Image (cartoon, rainbow, N blue to C red; front, side):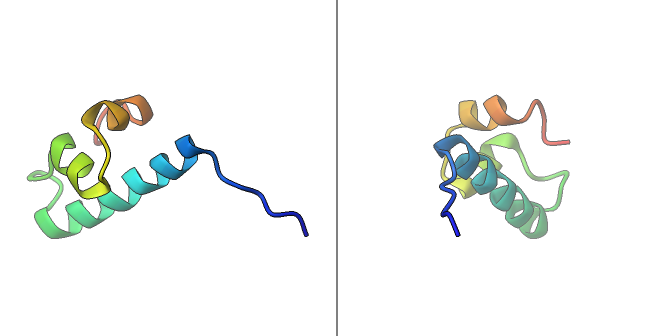
Length: 56
């Protein structure tokens, strides 16, 4: 079976999703900012916005 490596972009996208879920659980959706998602995911705010238009 061939190993399929994920791109850096795919890895960041997944990190953002994991960070968002973690932040939403910890702080609630209304109290979670894009900044907080970026912080938890260990990416920049610009990276979050490059992958998602909003937290919705």
